[in-house]
Image 1 (cartoon, chains in turn yellow, cyan):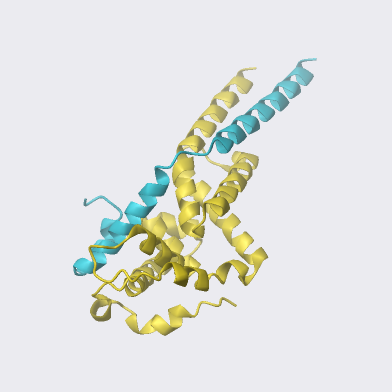
Image 2: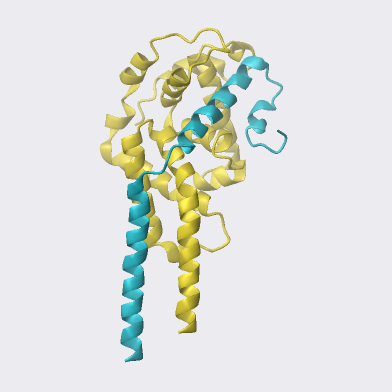
Length: 190
Length: 65
């Protein structure tokens, strides 16, 4: 009887904490996929998966990071399932980028979004996790299951590529790999 | 600003223009984060919770028999 009560209390916390994470989880999904409908499907799958394996969640640890990891895994398993269909959206986004943002200071949010979509998935998620979601490099590395150095270099490449795409000055002199434009432009994974 | 994670992206001695990118990224992300959470997710969580509680009560009732 006692045990059951304690468990219910923990469950309530689990639910409450999860509710508190949904806003940023959804923002992560949208910025990862560029689409609200896909993001919402991911969030729904994440909620179900997280609930099903909530006994594996250690209370007191970072639930946001845990949920982001689940959503991210779900995203990549969908990308794998769909093959290159999802990856191959270059044309669509190029179209969206038709207006040249040109001078900085006038960067339009739509243009920024379109440029973000053009990044390879691994660079996009790295710059989002570090630059927007508020995770540390350590946490981002854990979420992406890679080394901290890998996250750092992905963030750098993402930033350089964004600067190129958005035509902001400065990347030619300061980017670590501004010569890699050709390499990054072709992202036909596999 | 110092304890802000975005700061770490701006802290490479890079000139102004690069600063625009972290700022835009945050602006974009925040605009998404501020959107209302669709009702369906709140319903889903509620249903998962209720289903589990019902199952747990059933199990407890079974045990106390």
